[in-house]
Image 1: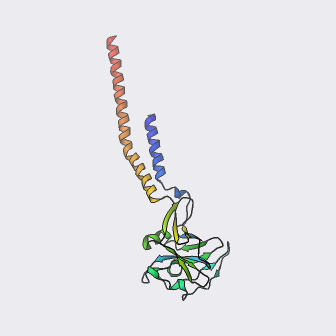
Image 2: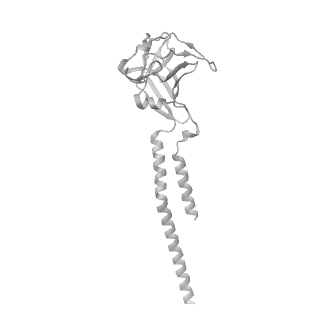
Image 3: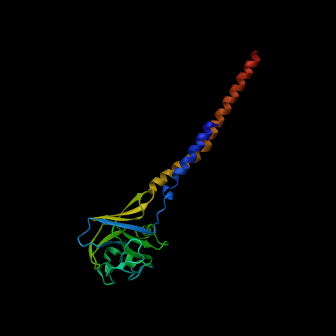
Length: 227
């Protein structure tokens, strides 16, 4: 019975490991924290770009300009960026400004150490990556002029960071919170294998136990006959 108990405990542990550890610390996938490095001179903020056509049901001509915000302040100060600005008109290779052209994008807030872009919960950044593919980022000055655009994003996974984006010169990383899907798949497969094998292993152990008991009983009977 000790062996069976040990096997059952191992199965429970394997199944527990298969559950995404990110559940222990929830990060909102509709909120992106954005940082940049090695940006062109004159950069005031970075704007995330998505490959969205003008006839997309979520496209709009112009939402609202980004704001310079302070911690705990209810409202920020809007930048002088209008529908005629370079970033609002940008449409190269099908990419447009997410914050300026997506109906479900909130105000892009520019803080001293990062930017924060909130989407409507019905359209988070996981949905955006699935629906529109790789992101890009544009370096923008105070008047909305584009100083540079990164290459398409690469996706990274981490249990310790929230959803967001980070640029370094020409590169852009889309940071997803949680374990890599491949890791989760391996964990689930391992747990499933243990659970599937469990009845077979238990049956084998029980069968061996019965054989040992029968052998012991026969040995006792033989000894009694000799007496």
